[in-house]
Amino acid sequence: MISIHEVIQLIEGFSLRERLIIIEEVLKNIREDKSIELPKIETQPSIMSLAGIMDDEEARVWYGAVEDARKIDQNE
Image (cartoon, rainbow, N blue to C red; front, side):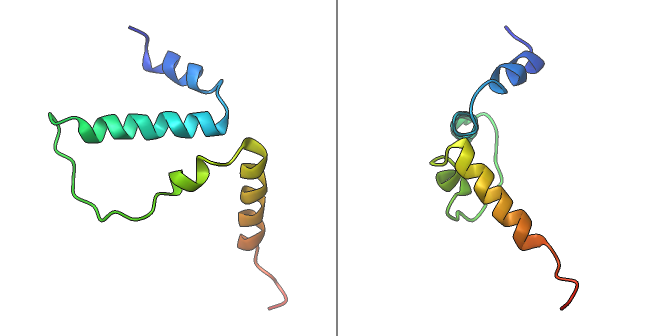
């Protein structure tokens, strides 16, 4: 068995899209695990479905757009 640290290092070698797929699968397995009780939450469209279709460059563009949108215009 490998350690959590080794798993994280391994995952860091994947692209953003591949990491999001891994996260989705881990969450799916957690939800399907009947030995734990998860709190009920309202389902909404998952951002993962949007993020999972982006490549690294598209993700950088979106991130830049969000950062620009968060800037405060001092003249207003």
